[in-house]
Amino acid sequence: MATTAQTSALRATAPAIVVLSVLALSAPAFAVQKAREGRQVVETVCAACHAPGKDGAPKIGDRAAWTPRFAKGIDALIDSAVNGHGGMPARGGVVQLEREELRSAVLYMFNFGLPPVAPPAEVAKADPRHKLVAGTDIYLGAMPAEAMRAGASSKASVPTGKGYYHLNISLADQRTGAQVKDAQVKLRVSDGMSEQASALAPVVANDSVSWGNFFKLTSGGAYNIQAEVTRPGVARPIVTNFEFRAP
Ligand code: HEC
Image (cartoon, rainbow, N blue to C red; front, side, top):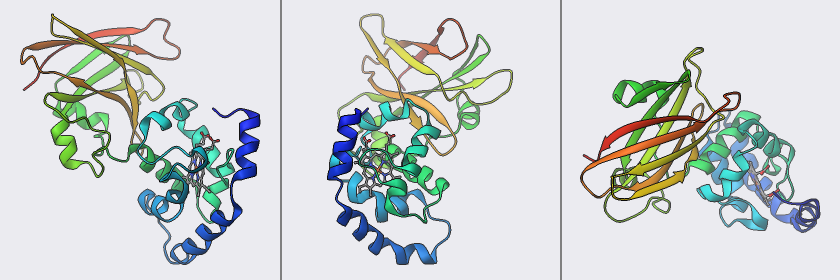
């Protein structure tokens, strides 16, 4: 997060000319179309700064840069896009953009390079990997990296090499049935000989949040996948184990 000094420095250096030229380029497109998709908004407006990472703008598809910003919550992040934040002009400098459009644009930039994530209900139907612990439904999903590379529009964030899986956890509150969006999730993946442990990064789609990361599963044997879920309002971390065999 930028300090006040950095923030005002960014403000001072943000070139007004860039913002104006973005406006001039995009205004005609915006006059005609009402429902603008995240991708279109990004390509016509946000990309001017977010593609090159101008003045420290988090780059499109750079989840390492975006993830800490999501820590304050999606809505607070959308607020910054609406109101401006440091070198980030309010609404990207295009006043006609509506909040929902900015939201779609932010999610598009965050998820760029990943295939769309199935919402938890579908994951649950398609996948028997489900546990219910401490009032929380926990679903494990796994997708081979090769499959993701085939579907992804940018290959940059999907590891190459054999045996990588994107392991994904999605959560629902058992009592309300609502999706849990504010948890922190860690996974420990062990084949009995070696162990990989990692905090998962949020994977945000329009209305769903899950957590995922890549793990290398090459032994061909069975893996124990231990998920540790920390939920605000739940006193202790919720721990559960899945048996997983790389197909
Ligand atoms: C003129 C350049 C510019 C344009 C155009 C621009 N951004 Fe940014 N954006 C930035 C910069 C610079 C930052 C980093 C500011 C900071 O760290 O406080 C940023 C940061 C952000 C953040 C993170 C704010 C936070 O609180 O951490 C969001 C969200 C964002 N931009 C969304 C957008 C969207 C959506 C668009 C397109 C509609 C867009 N930006 C267009 C320069 C731009």
